[in-house]
Length: 168
Image 1: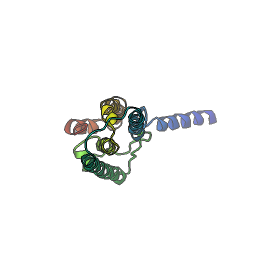
Image 2: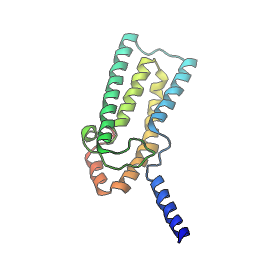
Image 3: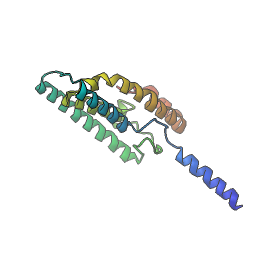
Image 4: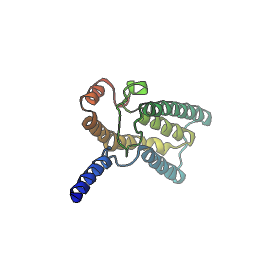
């Protein structure tokens, strides 16, 4: 009987450990790696963008927008008591607040922060890496999250997916 109980406990523990989307890495780390690659290449092959005043204004605007959207989105998750981290289970489906306009407002926030930093740091390579970064996000993070959320929340998530865009 003890061996049978241990097997049941192991099965429950394994299913709890696997209750998350299997993304390739946490999105902030992914954005950070692409930004770091842009900085390294920029140090070797630097190219100036536009005038500093314009870059600063655009960069600060995008960074502010990113922080605002990100904070509002994370607060909605906290308000519902669900996890933001992709390596933890989703416990609620959030569809209001910033999630009324996009299924991925946190990723929009990260993209605004990334592009804002590219302006502030004069990183032409950051803009060149933006398309591969967004492809990687779509293919290896968002698609896996959507598959996970469909399994977890079923028809509720499918209805939300039909009514709300992935990005904007």
